[in-house]
Image (cartoon, rainbow, N blue to C red; front, side, top):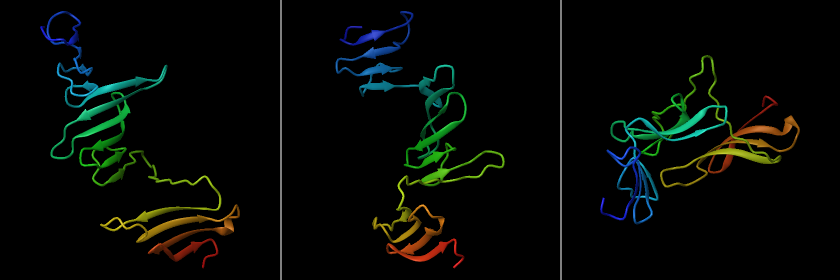
Length: 173
């Protein structure tokens, strides 16, 4: 080669395995890196792997779908992918094909899917807020209120416009 690119070629023939160009970009699997670290692999292939000594290997993998379903996933190397991010912004937990903004899938036999939100402070509220198309917060909410250590002062509230309209507590009222 006659350019100023630093190249590593394992067997002296064929493609370079690693290159560092004059911009300081490092390419693995590509001779034309366009970022500080540019890794190019075949479709549906792991591109970054970490081994926990004596334990599992975890890896990032990229795969092509159709349309906007290309994704990057993270999970056990060669096995179950724990989480995936699609190019359209959808996130899957337990699935590489999310069909909602956040799609949680439990594939355990007899398992229960659970979404857990935890507030570690007493006398605090844990809530889910739903927004309208303009991003207005507080149009609808689901709130768990934990006002002290006594179970008698815990309740679930449903409401709109940031006001609780329905309270479900342990008094059966």
